Length: 433
Image (cartoon, rainbow, N blue to C red; front, side):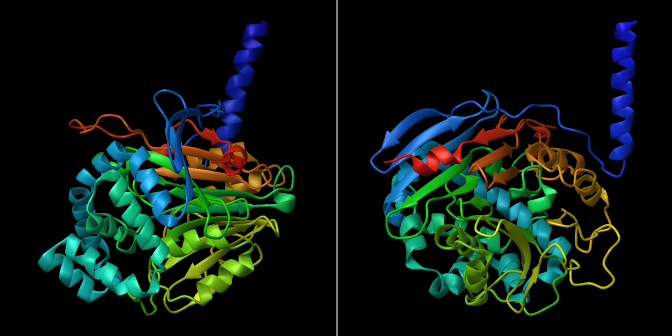
């Protein structure tokens, strides 16, 4: 009799959950968070290499100390084989991806760039991008790339080309910032889910890392969720600020390839800024290139704002601002008190999943809620980062790294279907050299 009651409860619970989240394409996650301590693997004069995660699902944490060159050299030295494996396979993959992008979104790319790619190839377009952005890019980024090249035994030009690809690629991603009355303890939580397209030949899935920077030439200690051999920031957290981004499809204003590469600008926000206002000043006062949405979380104000970021315009959205800049506001994207969010779809989105999950959990949003969001919305195929501003923790999930080169008919497991790993940034931020 007791067993029958348990079965009835489980079935009833499953039916209730199915009804609550019936507007979502995915289901609830299957795994608990992995929260064991990281293991030290190796050290060098300006760096330490750790690994964290279960045996079949690991992320390297790289502690980097010193000048830009020293930190680049330390990463290249500690991750030499991983960096080289990614770089050896990168250009073939990116060529296919960019050509597919041209077929789908040629109207949203500068004609001269499309012409260069079609006539001379992707490397020429990356060189062109490097030339267009050079005078706007602080020298410390070039110094760090030189250190990375020297440590990993690569040509500097190759490293520079790889670091220009975010200016060409368009990623459909999701972001959430929840705070104050929306969360279970009133603290700020930020979700960043990177939907990059999970091609089995994508080498960026092979070696995910969390780089923790301890710069000696100014700024804060900060962390970047990335992959071996890439120093830009698509996802990151500093204890002061959290950043994330999503490509702004259908932006119809003026575009430019001359300016500060956005992934370097976002990294400067992590290193130097302590508030959303400081970050916005940095955005306003630099030459911008691509059209993207940026998510900014701030520990000083315990708030999150979204930014329409482009060469021509900057517009800021909080929890009371209709998003995006369309009237009337889409029914699938209502304002939610103390929550700012953008789903993975082209905006304005008509998909009701994300809003329904956030509204159902309003006032009780916690880390598990945001993990559930990624699984229910099926967002974050390459990597996912959740930042807990109260406790300086990052929760990471990454795509499967096995089967390389991929066999026929192999499909990598996306990050949103994998176990999340807790990275104790409170420890790593405070670990001395």
